[in-house]
Length: 305
Image (cartoon, rainbow, N blue to C red; front, side):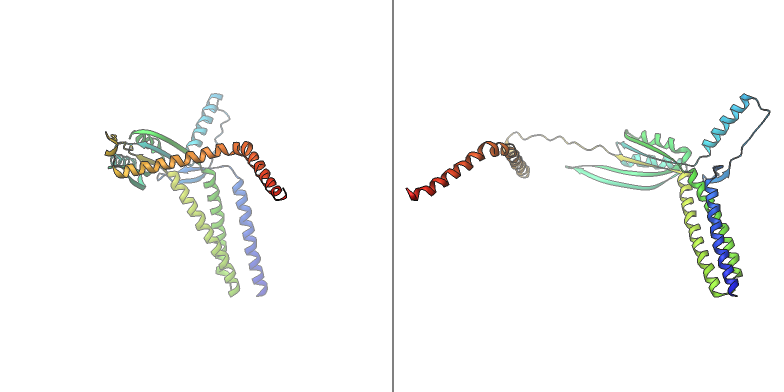
């Protein structure tokens, strides 16, 4: 029985080492590509190489160009962007963008809105986060730019093909390891063996779930691009008419103007002192020091005279 338990633990350790070696081999292989299904999810598929010994040079060139185009199309790309637009009507522009993203088959994932006031006038600012199928991302950017005066446009594309291929390879290895551990679990006869295999099986299952969540998140971001649109109504600039006579100025306005004047004078005094201090230290302070010493010396001599 003890020999059987020892053999079982050795098999588990060998299985873990084998899975690590297989993962390294799969990570190093570069012959896999991602193919996107109808729902936009990217899946890994092996690259198929086509060779034709009897094809002409022109046919080979066309085949190579077609292969490159297919490879570019099969890349898993995450597209993101930011657009800031000054609009006349925040609510109208927000409604237009919502209708546009829904027309493309996307959705609004987040919105925010802020109300500002200047005197008695108000204006709105905020942003709308839109998720749209990757094929319609550029069209949605143009729709956002058409809402008003464009201030900022930023777009970014991230290639995550290798990350998805690596995740899939690691998941395949972990699933194979899980299947082997399940067989060992069924064959375990002692409580110690059951607990040992169960711990390994729990760790492997947790790692599988974590990697599957990462893969699903990447596939979702590949299938649906993200565009953040910042909408800003123009800030009001009300015309302020100066009073004809100084005493017609409102009391609070006069008080704050006086406070500003005091602050200005204090700041000017501090700056002037900073300018004058070096001159005082160089030209005035030595004479003051010498005068003080002379007075003190004279004061000491007076009692003896």
